[in-house]
Amino acid sequence: MRIEIPETCVAALIGISGSGKSTFCEKHFQPTEVLSSDHYRSIVSDDESNQDVSKDAFDALFFVAGKRLDNKRLVVIDATNLSGAARHDIIHLAKSHETSAVALVLNTPEEVCRDRNSLRETRVVETSIISKQTIQLKNALPQLSRDGFSKIYIIADPDEPIEVARTKLSCNKRDEPGPFDIIGDIHGCYDELAELLEKLGYAIDPNTFAASHPDSRKAVFLGDFCGIDNKNVETLRLVMSMAKDKMAFSVCGHHDAKLERALRPGTSEIVPEFQSIAAQLRDGGPDFRKNVKQFIDSLPSHLEFDCGNLVVAHAGILEKFHGRVSSRIRAFCLNGDLVSQKSEFGSPVRFPWADNYQGKALVVYGHTPVPEPKALNNTICIDTGCAFGGKLTAYRYPEGDLVSVPSRTSSKMV
Image 1 (tube, rainbow, N blue to C red):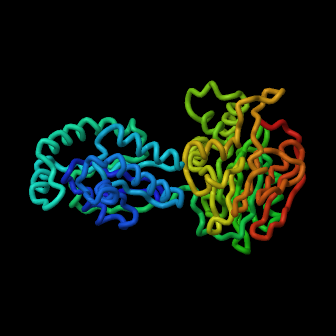
Image 2: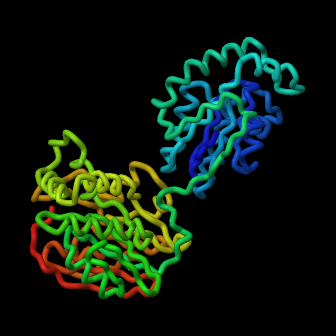
């Protein structure tokens, strides 16, 4: 059995007394990663079996768990976690720290738990409690998917061969130091993209859309690949080919997310422009639309590079979101910091998050067209409105140079 645990998350053991939770933790996790309710009962009362101090124990446990999550560390909670309230607290802990929760259910037979319990020298649990917990576990199993756990693993026998693998978050490219050429919003401006890449030193095969750089540089695309009446098929072929060949990285833009929805069956609510773009993609062949949808589905909200010194996101990102994955972070990275009111033209109003940014990492982003790249507080916006008749711009990292080519179109951008 293979269990995949994100490198930063809350992993909750769920099981009745004697099911082997603590032994499982000792076998598969570092001691510092495991926060045991029994241990915290002893911390606050010198007696790990003292149920009267459970509230104080869990208050202390969750406080330490929060500090570990603040530092992007794994948290494993060793407790029965059989009640809906207990699991609700775990889900709330994960969400409040912009991470996910994984359920590790030890579904050990009741008779085995009874036998183990009878052999204990300490923390012996009454037989009636084990019977009650068995019923609680049976009732909990159908609820787990609705509780909000991102993954659920049912372990029938904790003694069977089990591999617990740590998986990197989709945004973690910290081991990629560069150098990079970060390219702003393309919106189907394929000719300008090809010209810019060639100006940056990339060689492009127009037949296969393969691209390479003699100095092992890699491109980083900030999303929003397609635009109205532009060369969307060619743009996507080039971007996807470079990504497949590991010559480029990409994050998702808000237009890409809308295009992905337009590629789903029965999505008539999508604005006509995106339905039009989706229809254009049929020119790429029978499997092209499916491949585009899969590609967009795979795109992360943001990426951390160079040991966290560089972060890229389509619309920007707050420092507290760096290196974390959640729906709230994804919404911010795709759309910016939206506020409730609309502008006089009915468009969304975005809070200028970069005005107050004080992070150590350089953030390179696009989304909001500017006449010239806008650097502020260790951030830089490089969407220079190519689809508006401006230019397509690249930021070279770590050099800090800006390279642009003029737009060949004045097409209206969606």
